[in-house]
Length: 317
Ligand SMILES: [Zn+2]
Image (cartoon, rainbow, N blue to C red; front, side):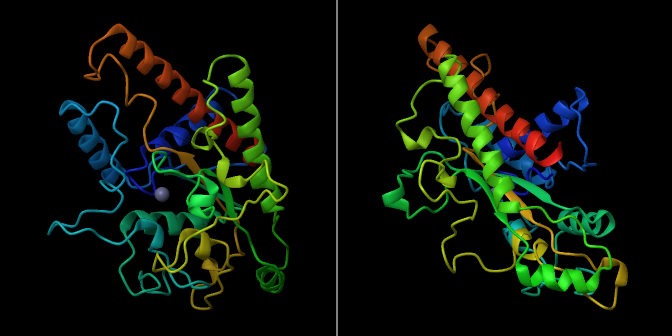
């Protein structure tokens, strides 16, 4: 389970950290799991400092900046490649690709760490937590179902299952990944509705922007766990594309592995539950404002906690 692939998506780090806390509290899980709550900690710290500075400059309720901390800043001040588009060619391992990504750029140290870990542990699935902006209008007719919060999967294809069967004598456990993603999404939805009934979370449900997993289209006749991406915008190979395909590089036998379903949890909004703490935020200072902030902060705790619980319940139990 990964958080903070994009350092600017700090809520993903909180979700992964909450998952650690759930396991520490004794959650009974049948799978062994590795959690990397903050894959790019320097980028996270950069984003965090930048957000605190903006708070200090009097932007208490602004959505955190999506760009700052998303990519690594190089020593000459330029931005490096998108960390999630920094994977080797599909089907190749990073060591036999001379630590270069599919476009020939050096793979960042943090991603090398991740790729070594994947080679060593051969996970049966990877859950990568991200965040997606909540401010832009995301009504379906306006956005063509793109870039919405939800739980998605890059599944292992039938072709790769076939390759995997030939490569490995024992077939690894390959889950029904679409169903798993939709079940996790349904659990988030159910919990959100319960919390609304209990008065813990405001009922703004008629506004699609407040549906925590709107991108899975659970209300439609054709709910989906497939990520709708704009075509041709991102160059390079993503973790989802690389990980879901089998690696069969003959030069490094131990790096051969089956395809791994890659689940992407897109949490609505970048901000953490502590970003708008009224005791640290320079809000206008009225009691009403402080109350409103505290309420939104508590709702955010619920939202991030529910995502962490869904990951534990559906992917780890
Ligand atoms: Zn991301």
